[in-house]
Picture 1 (cartoon, rainbow, N blue to C red):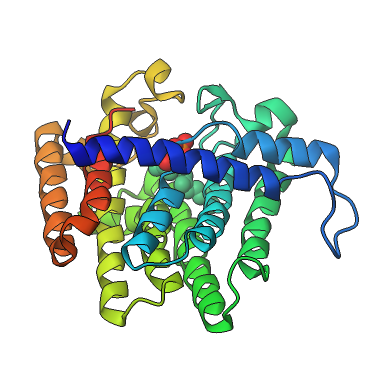
Picture 2: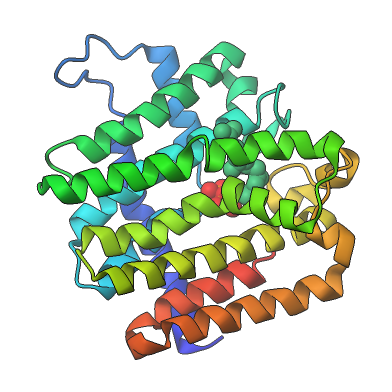
Length: 304
Ligand code: GRG
């Protein structure tokens, strides 16, 4: 393992601890101003869906892309925690019987198994809202133009033309068999959009130049694509105990993935190509981008 890969592992672990502390604070029992009460079963379901491990990769990307441009780590942490709320909501809803119907997530019972379907739906709804609450809160970002840019970018990444829309296309793909372009597009929306936002957000909150922002956005698109490709490889090759969730679901549902169409050898070559593209993209930042590049390698090579 190279020095930057070791540094990446340490930072991923350290950042995850900070993110968990921040999320624990957001999910406290006391109502905030203008809230009336935080119902205990709903709060418990939300906490189960959020404070149950997870790599916290997306907040890591926010923190590290902000660090690249000298942005505030405190702000990046709160933006990353907001993003993690949306990621966790998507997992809670994705696991519901009407979607992927999963009983296991991060090695534990899914939220609807532990707290019932109604609480799981409401937990997802409340996490989505909490993310924007956290972004809008005065202690997260003080400058209005930055705050609005973050809220707009996250809305576009999470909603109709982003993650939720990608999930809809994914459900349609079970019966409509999209072509490769269609698969790439739906994956860029379903999985890629939040990862793209994670990388771009660091540039936004640091008030980086338009050129730097576009570069980080492209980096996010590339690693988002690598993330989904690696996930499809894992769905085909890993066992449920290693992953902490069910596997083989894509094939069971007749879902078209690029790996199923092109094969594992192609997928490995494509992952290497994406890492090389990411590396060329961040070359102008020199050593300062080493940890982000280690993140790209981690995403492409992850086996759990
Ligand atoms: C329900 C609106 C809605 C959207 C669901 C993200 C998503 C869209 C569905 C999840 C399906 C899935 C397993 C996609 C593969 C990529 C993915 C999001 C994997 C889980 O992310 P990790 O590995 O998980 O970052 P941890 O547990 O580390 O947070």
